[in-house]
Length: 492
Image (cartoon, rainbow, N blue to C red):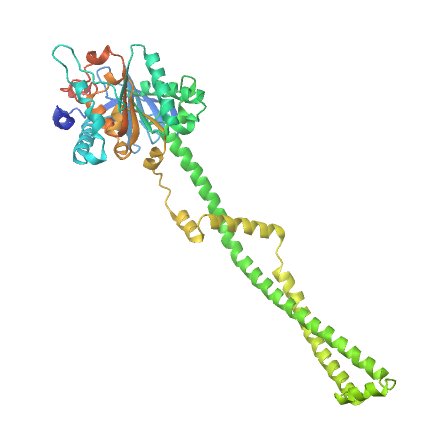
């Protein structure tokens, strides 16, 4: 069987299962008594409810929640069910105390999303890497004598089959450290949220021991069930908590930028007016300097004329004759003196006007050192951000967290198999390496859906004794985990 044939077979079985669920009315409401808030992680709330003993919910299935206190209905996600204890992840708080609620699971919708993902892999094969998925096909086919056929290892396929869980996870942690150091983007797949928490904690500790900042590298998709694992706090690694912190910081920086921009707009007309006044002041000062220079020249010429007039009668005859030859005699020198005096009087008036204008402009052009420094810093900030127009566009943009872009920048993402197959966000994100922890406990559909997201390498890990015992790799059961949704009889 080829991978295309296997995918088409899984799609057909998923549609058949969806039809059966709808016809059997298994997506039926379940009323449960008041629950309790376990913890809040970022913007997600983890609630615990006690359900009837005959009711079982598949994990990672969306559930409509209708509170009995007539508040607005909301939607949650099943993270786990242990016995009668059901843990739901909810984005909107249900209040305190938590009222009794009616739960309406959407198993048919979950099956449809998984089928849509597989159909998308067939229709848009160029957007998915089906080469790695092809290597999984022999694992799902049992031989007549030797049991399940295990494909040989290669650079694209690595298998860690060990009975000791701790030992094989340590191997995965060592492998992850090498991949992160090689700048590879890794997706860790686990069968349920508790297993994902434990594997994430062990890998985070390995990254920390290797001197890597695991807080900025790891994202645990959805809210962790465990508070900590392997001595590492998992709450700070939750994807939604990280998104919330990132955009809270972004909004804080945006508010700071808004204040700076408004202050810049406030100071710009003032500083522009001050600059114009300074320009006028510089021009008037230049004019004053020129007038003073002319005054000094006239004073020197007047002093020379007056000296000559005083000494004229005592000058030698030949010198007076020489002066008369160029039109200088006592009468003409007296005319020069009066001319210089009139010019000097005119210059004095112009200098007085210039100095009065300087005295008027000086305070108008004055800028304190602190104000000038503040404006220069604001102007530098505006320039670095591309100018006032870019800042206005940035401030006008809606605060819409781009979860896809944030997920694409995480180096290591840990998620459950059902969540990867059932969340459309993963259909738009690609990884370099897919690591499957407890692989024999993950079904065909989920393995195929996740394998299409990896580009370079596939790592399978698990207990070799579970390869056949779990029954998850039987092609006749493609959904991936036992489904025991509420039945009409159990709800009656």
